[in-house]
Image (cartoon, rainbow, N blue to C red):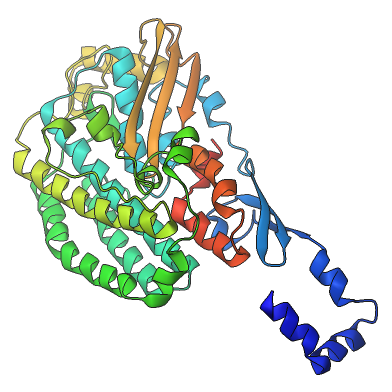
Length: 417
């Protein structure tokens, strides 16, 4: 408001504006509201998110998120694919933490089909799951920092992410589209070299991450652009179904790894970071602390993992190893049947969810006993978290909208499922 008064009092500036456009009046410009589109093709929307914003000056009066620009139909596709064929598609849901999605999907199908997993395979899954969480949070805080102008932090986080992808390259043979998990275990065993590489990465990563944290936490511009911005109160976060770091940044201590333990998380020592402020800065701090907790979890898994089977021996449900397929007729037949017709879970339905980097990722299956799901519904965290954007944006300045979007870390591959 003070700026408006200054401009109208500045006769020289006022005359210059009126000369350039004789139809313009200062009163009209201030009284009119403006509607603008942010996205879907905009770097700050983290994919193809469109926000329809109604502005009064620079203040956001109304915010309406619109999804659907990826046109994926992933849930419908599952009805025409067997359970094995769908594993590679889970990579593409949250492509910043692809292995977490692989693990979540196979855990859900194993619950439906009643498949037991060897201990070594479970530890390998926990390790890749937490590496995926670190990788996802590195992308989240790096791009978030970039959104508010901190370019160096963005490059540092992507440098560390590259080291993790090198681990995946050795462990899995792929860097991005991993498809590493199998029902009953994982596609290949973790070699000693791969486990050493993970430990070496963790030993070095601590100092690199501390340096990154000091860079941002002592940056006054970064902190002041986030402090008190995009408030999400605790009660509203719960009522909107927000999960993950966005929920814990609003003061709710809910983490599925603790609330409904799966794999060996109930035997693992780690904290659930919680901040009560509910603003963009709190959501950033939760992710930073969760990276440190993931490092602790991986160290414990590396200490506990023992030699053993990396895939269950269940010929009717689990793909046999290639060595056996090439040497045994019975295994060849099982492989043929599973690849062509899939596994046949019993008739019924089931829901299983895990704590992914962005929140609760859940798969709901309805099985009619055939080799493919009769119905699949995915509870994706990004889709649910985007619901909070209108609440967080309305009443804020338009320049803060960029920071607010980055603070909830949406990935549109997951929202547009």
